[in-house]
Length: 319
Image (cartoon, rainbow, N blue to C red; front, side, top):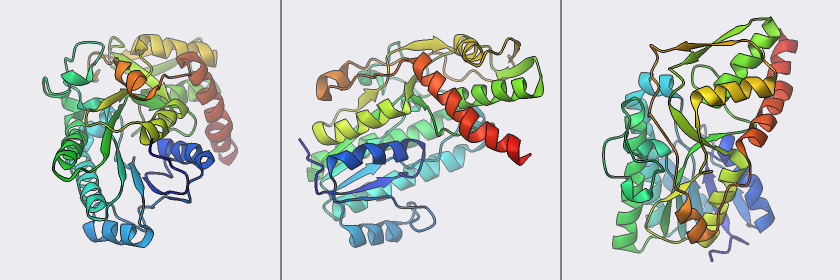
């Protein structure tokens, strides 16, 4: 066990959607300090900035969650940026962590790293059996290289780095910007705004036939914190709920929970992305005892309520 009590821990991306929840779950474990570097103060693409960060704080552990992310549209519009920034941040951070003798390094990878036609459920051993789905391949490959780096550093330097592969996340505090958001926050926003404006139709990307797996943000944070404490292995580990749902069924469930009785207009000319996504979560359960607690219905209800209270109502009052 890697005891987090009285440790100094750096959480990159710690002010973000997942990172803020990870920081909340670290607090009861008694670390001496949890450092959350902000991009305005520390550019994680810059080797010297990272070195200065580690020299100043001398962390015992780094949980690397910082990433440039978005939905299918954002990935399609920014392939170069998504590849470079995600790769360089992780590569430079891990190298400097090795040089500064950081004792534990946690890589948060991506489900987008899996091949396009991976057999369902996705097993970690299938990670290298093909090329990722084209719309998010640059992002997925950038994150995949950090798994290679972690394994290489473990082999050559004895560096204690672990690699986790979270599935699509959602929950309170998610990104609801329609230009960059993922499917759940985008659908929630479209439905709630349609209700407020008295519209009876919403547009949804794709055919609805593709499937996805979703993990509630609190469950994802629990998995990361638990793995930080209790897992030390070279092999990557899937982090998910193990529950698959089609985008059509997801959209219908969100409409039901929002009590929206309008119609869904499927934009079949827009890409579906990867045909199916569902994880085999056996390794996480066996290696460090993680199983997701929150059902999709429960998580969606909480996320919808949060969006209405914290985002939609504020926007309505401001208008």
